[in-house]
Amino acid sequence: MSQTEHRRARPEVSVIIPVYNEEAGLRALFERLYPALDALGADYEVIFINDGSRDKSAALLAEQFRTRPDTTRVILLNGNYGQHMAILAGFEQSRGDIVLTLDADLQNPPEEIGKLVNKMREGFDYVGTIRMQRRDSLWRRKASRAMNRLRERITRIKMTDQGCMLRAYSRHIIDTINRCGEINTFIPALAYTFSQNPVEIEVAHEERFAGESKYSLYSLIRLNFDLVTGFSVVPLQWLSFIGVILSMGSAGLFVLLLIRRFIIGAEVQGVFTLFAITFFLLGVIIFALGLLGEYIGRIYQQVRARPRYLVQTILEQRDGETVAGAPRQSVVQAVQPAQTIDQGPTR
Image (cartoon, rainbow, N blue to C red):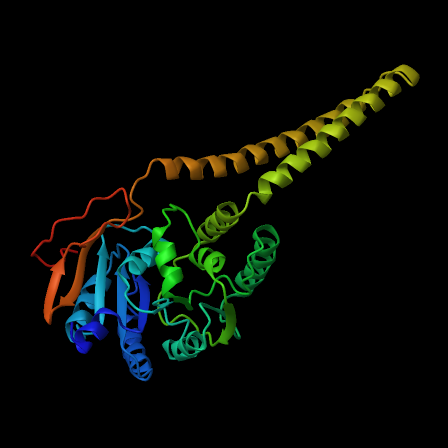
């Protein structure tokens, strides 16, 4: 293999960008992303993952691939699997020694990529980021700060700003993540558990260029449940501790009511106190069942061994020729390699 072919096979930098209904902002992303990467002075590749977009995002990505086939690849998933699954699909196809993730909404400026690459070149294997002067709403900033504190206390994973997806990972971390078969996961936290020399830096943050955030309140709650239950059993331990305390309290209350019954006699008003205590205990029981169900649900999803995502088409350049075909390797162990197809994307 010549040196040129080797550089093409193993670029220094891979940039993974999940895309879901970002038609309005993609051209602006292209105009800023490629000059920022050209300024690095390194071989690079950009991998866009279309996560089942229902607008014209797939067509715009295909157009950009035709414009820069030497540095661009496009992965078209056959449905919407979520941001983290789309990123995992990009990790599976990445080849760079330094792998970065970037959102397509331009809230994290592409011009900040150079900061992360320079830090990685200093010998760090994981570069987290902290958004300066966040442009999100007040409630979202407050909720994010509260969840950060709760998550760090439960999981012992230290990330100052867990919501920023502009991050950089070394090749060995990406290879380790690719060997994991988790159905529900939070990539920055998972990578942190594998890192040996992590660091965090501050990066700029801008308002969303176009469209609306794809994360609803429910999605954010769901994501944090995945983060907490996927990396710690502390909630179950807390639940056991609460159960012991309530059992001791209930036993004490029973003794108190029994003594009161024989000394003072029956008290009608005490019925309402018992109702209040009963409803409180029912609430604790329902919460406990929900928490147990969360862990059991994760086990259920995992033992089914279904594929985390399915790749419809990959647009890439092989041996100087443009190719649109199915992936040449399985996306997870449970999926057999698909046959190469000749037709282009159908989305």
